[in-house]
Length: 112
Image (tube, rainbow, N blue to C red; front, side, top):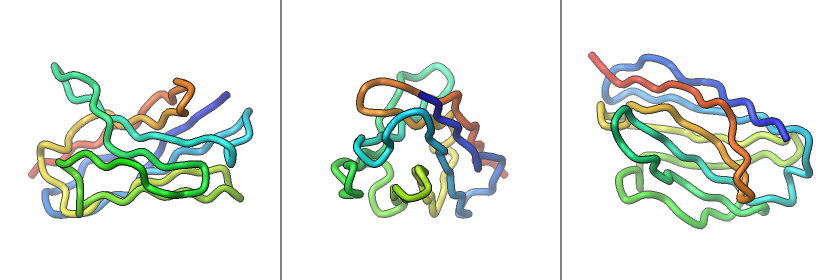
């Protein structure tokens, strides 16, 4: 199982970023997926969950209306569209299978 996140970076408040998670080594289209984030000194937080068929099953209250998770099973790729970013969104973002396999993460920093 390999999960590789990308798309993070430094962005100003109010701007947008799209994260990607390229999956390989397992039948991606058969697995639900999750996005987590972890900020320094804080516990890991579940941000979004999406079923194998692309149905959203969870958004954290803190991101509802701003973040959108999606997937392209033909490309074995998971996405997280993040709009109206705020400094509190600063964290390392990870994609994870529902069986607990996780990528290395991508840093998102929201700052002026």
